[in-house]
Length: 212
Image 1 (cartoon, helix red, strand yellow):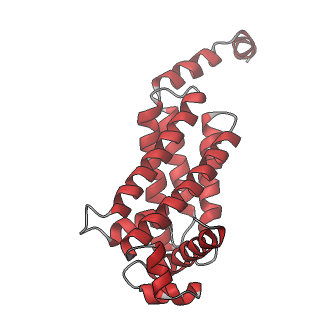
Image 2 (cartoon, rainbow, N blue to C red):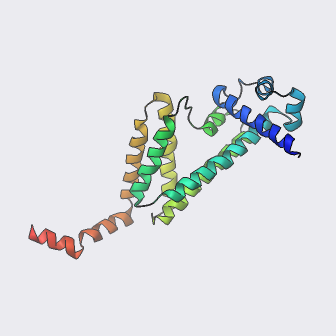
């Protein structure tokens, strides 16, 4: 594809992203996207054969960006599992504080297309959420959290719930509440309890207890 055509395609994707995020999929027409991109409808349909294919391409592009950003964030996490949980949900609260924040675009599109289970956008969204959950499991495994896959799923449920409730109530404290619940999950892990008991029995701690 010529470079000029690639630039035009990217401009269309950028415009579609802005409009779909602002108004939703069903309320945006191809005419609006063409006008926002300053191209003819013929040019628009040259790049994307339908509105459905445009949405799918836009979500694929956003998936790559979001996955790269989440991996970068995950690579920066360090310390105890609890401190990592705090950082994750603090970042979620900061994200929710942006002007005109509208929650997870992938979730919103799936809800909007709930009566179309075979729509390509739903397939992409499902893959996107699964890959993010999988990367969280990798981060937890690296932090020596037992049953990282199961724990990642539980924490991901809390994250998705916090996003939905912050959007409904406009209250970012749901992120802190979700972080607290996630840390309880981590601390209730049998291996974590064993580690804590071992720490209580260290010679230094035992000596302090005897001196008291």
